[in-house]
Image (tube, rainbow over all chains, first blue to last red; front, top):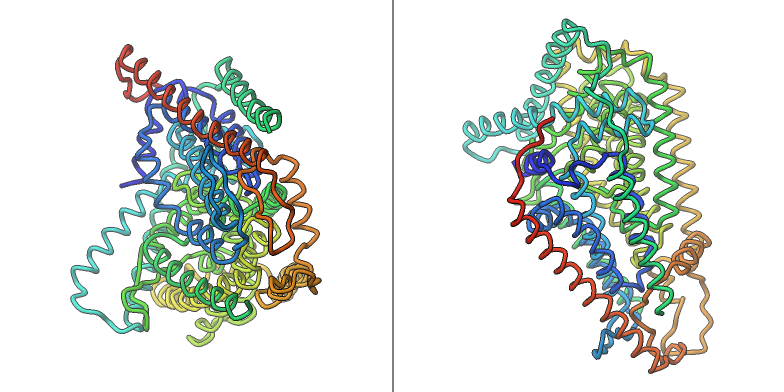
Length: 257
Length: 379
C-alpha cells in the first residue's frame, strides 16, 4: 500500500530520525507559518524556503521522487483553486527575472505562489511523517498537552486503520466477483449500505474482542512507554539551525531589497 | 465585463464540480483546507478555536468514554476509512461514483461528543499520515469536517427523525442532517478563505461552487447514511438501541439550540463578508477601464482582508513584479528598480538551486563514505 511506504520510511535510521518528535513537530509548524506568511508578490524567495525541507529529506535519505509523487496525489483541491486565480485576477503585471522581463497577469503569479507554498509546506510535512514513528508523534502530543483521551483515540485509530482498510478491500473484491452487471441506483445504494453496515458490525465485534483481551492483560487506559526521551543537544542544534535559517532569510530579504 | 465575469464564474463552477466529483470518487473526501489558502491570523485563530473545542468535547466525553470503550472509539475511527472505500455508481453521471464520508453516521450512532472525537482523530491522521490538508489548516479542518458536522448533523437528525419509527423518517432525517452538516462545512471553507484573502476568486462564486457541490454530496451522503442506519436497525437493533441510551446524546431543545447557534454564527459571517466583499456582478462596478476617472461604487476591501494584507506586507520580501503603468492610472514603474529586483529574484532562485545541489552532493559523498544505513532502528 502506498501509505505503508511512509510508515516504513519512518523506521529507518538517520540523524533526522533520531531527533525528538516534539522538536520536529514544532519546527514544521513554525516553518509553515513563515512560508504562508509570504505574500503573493514574493515568488522567487520561495526557492530559498525550499532549501530547508530539501536538506531535511536528503539528510534523512528519503527519496525525493516518492515525496513529490505523494504531494501530487493530495494536490487536486489546491490545484483547482490555484488555477481559478487565472480567471479572476487579470491585472497586468510586469514580472522580472534576471535579464528577462515579461508581462503577465497577477493571477498567474498568485497561482505560482500558492502552488510553490503548497509544495514546500507539504514537503516539510511529509518530511516529518517519514522521519518520525507515529508512536513517537503520539508521545510528543501527550507531552505537549493534548488530552489523554484524544491521544489514546489516535493510537487505537492508527493501530486499526490498515487492518480495516484490508478488510474493506476483501469485501469489495467479493462484491466485484459477484456483481456481474451494473445495478440501478437503488440497488447500488442498498448493496453498498449492506457492505458498510457489515463492516460496521464487524468493527464493533472486533472492538469488543480487543477490549476484552486488553483488559484481561491489565489495560487501564494508559499506554506505558519504555524510557523517557529528553530533548538533547542535537535537538537544540536542529532548532537553532532552523531559527538562524529563517532569521537569515528575513534579513537577506530586507537588506538587499 | 459583467458578462465576462459571469462566464468565467460559470466555467469555474463547472470545472470545480467535475474535478470535485472526480476526486471525491477516486480517493477520500477532498474538502481539506490547505495551508496556502489561509493567512497566518486565520490559521492560528482556527487552530486555537479547534483546540479549545476539542478540549471541551474531551472534557465532556470523559464520563461517557471509559477505558473499556477506548478500543471501540479507535476502531470506529478506523471504520470511517474502510467505509470511505465502498463506492457506488451515481445516477445521471456516467463514470463517476460516490462514497460516504461517515461523520454524520458516527455522530448519530455514537452521539455527538464521541462522534466528534472519532472524526477529529480521523482528520488528524489524514493530515499527519496521508498529508490531506496542511498542519496549519488542521484547525479549520477539525472545525469544518469534525466538530461542526458532528454536532449540527446530530442535532438536525434528532429534530427530523425523532423516534426513528418509520423508514421515511430515517431517510428524511439523515438526508437533511447530511445536507445541513456538509453545506455548513463548505460555507465555512469559503468564509475562511475569503477572510484570509489569499484567493482572488470572488467570495460569492467560491461560496456557490462549494455549496453547489456539497448539495450533491450531501444528498448522496444522506441516502447512504439512511440506508446504513436501516440495515443496522434490521440486523443489529441492539447497536442503535445502545446508542439511544448513551448519556452523551442531547435532548431536542439542545438540538434546536445547536442549530440556531450555528445558523446565527454562519449567517453573521456571511453577511459580514457580503457587506464588505462585492460579488462577481459588483466587481464590474468596482472598476471601469473605459473611464479612468470613474469612482468605484463598492469598496472591495473588507477590514479583515485589509488587516491580513497589512500583516503580510510587513513581512513582504523580494516582490517579483510591478504593476504596469497605463490605463488604470497606476504608478509608473522605475526601470532601474525593476532591473535590480529582477537580478535579486534570479540570485535567489539560482543560489537556492546551487545550495540544494551542494547539499545533495555532500549527502551523497557522506553516504558513500559511511555506507548506506537503511536498517531499522534497534529500539
